[in-house]
Amino acid sequence: MTKYDYDVLYLGSGHATFDGAIPLAATGVKVGVIESGLIGGTCPNRGCNAKITLDQPVVLTRLAERLNGVVNGDLTVDWSANVANKQAVIDGLPKMIAGLMTQSGITLLNGNGVLIDNHTIEINGQQRVTGDKIVLSMGQRPNHIDVPGTEIAHDSTDFMNLKELPKHLAILGSGYISMEFATIANAAGSDVTVLMHGDTALRQFYQPFVKQVVDNLSTRGVQFVPQANVSGLEENGDQVIVTYGDDEALAVDYVLDATGRIPNVENLGLETVGVDYTEKGITVNDHLQTSVDNIYASGDVIDKTQPKLTPTAIFESKYLSSVFQGKEVGPINYPVIPSVVFTSPRIAKAGVTVEYAEQKDCKIVRNHIADDWYRQVDKQTIGDSFLMFDDDQKLVGATEVSEKADDAINTLLPALEFHLDAKQIGRIVPLFPSIGASAWEKL
Image (cartoon, rainbow, N blue to C red; front, side, top):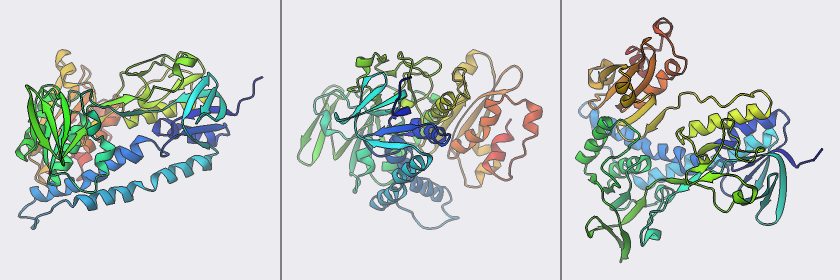
């Protein structure tokens, strides 16, 4: 019987790894984790945690704005202090996550890993380690727009580390990152121009709800340029000239490239060992196995129809942990995965879409947020929610645009995931008054 250094060897240390690797190692399975950067990967260090910390002052200023007259005094966002607070919040996370892993028995290996064969990874061209099973969980990285001068643009990590906010900011793209950072930068006092690739922002979300967000940002001074078709970037002194459209030019102080994220699949030896992948990521079967049967993949690096979000990566990591422990032999059965864009107001969704519900003649219950007494407590005026029900009157989808959309959709997840009927829903008695009570009483 061949002896390997590790029972399971992970390449990458983000949520697609540590949420499952920690309980796996705690059972006595010998686990190694290879990481070239900060322990914890994107979400804790340069993604979700950092972003939501920068967004919190926006939430506060919006609330003060709505309660003006009840609460007196103008609030402003101190950008430098906000970035410093963000850093204070996330600085300790790599050490904390590393501590949880080592305490469970995981060996952390620092460096760039490359597959040599289906059981061997070489680290920094020097050390070779072997694993009976290997999990590829390298995640994604920011895309760089393919135009002359692309190196002038900055990515989301650069932006979140800026000590001073640019006076005029151009954002390329209109997806999650673009819309969230446009919200934050605008609230902090920057002149923001969003150069869109097409006609619509946030294509994954219900467009009438997206329009409410775009319209609100527009009234606050954010400029949206549909079908901008950016063709080049060029430095001009302290400014950057963005060329777009029919040779139109925009002079700004800073360019944020938010044109998407791409999977980390290059220069890893995937071709050497025969792991199949596409431009969207690594190809896996319904057990998260790659084309090499002892090599698996987890998280955003996978080519999949499920949303590439932290909750998805966590679920996949825990699924593999159960597979490796022998507790799970069946294919992965994804739960309802919610998603949210942290604009202000927010848009959140889970389950079937409004468009799908309309095609299938599902019952759709529409609620205007301002008509809900609980939303009047903090004077919300923007927002709507749609609840979609099947023929058995079970909730199959929900989407909302509001200041509390994320909390409302979170509250409804048990009804969506477990297909609760009216009697079962009636057994759920939420705290009152609360956003949970407000969400449940619409069912």
